[in-house]
Length: 126
Image 1 (cartoon, rainbow, N blue to C red):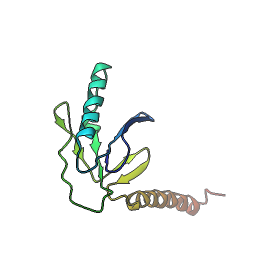
Image 2 (spheres, rainbow, N blue to C red; image 1 turned 135 degrees about the horizontal axis):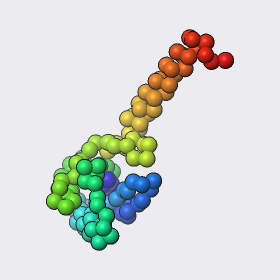
Image 3 (cartoon, rainbow, N blue to C red; image 1 turned 30 degrees about the vertical axis):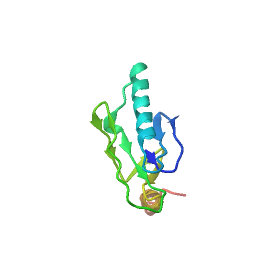
């Protein structure tokens, strides 16, 4: 996860890790060094990063929309860049809108209401 104008630091929450990096003045060196540091730390502690499950999300908080960042590579494999992903049950999108998250919650609610209506039709609810 790459956030422009954010804070940098590795987090470990509920079995999932997130690396948030600050990129200012289009200088992504500190962010890429932090990824390299994480990769070296994992190797030094006999841990393996699952690159197929690793995603990169860039959130641009500046008014300028033009940004071209080099792709992130871990152990020589390019990390997939996505527009949105689900992290700890919350859908995060690069445009910082909640529409994807609220649509997914509404879909779940509709599915559950359908099942409750079916139970009511069979008079199984009191």
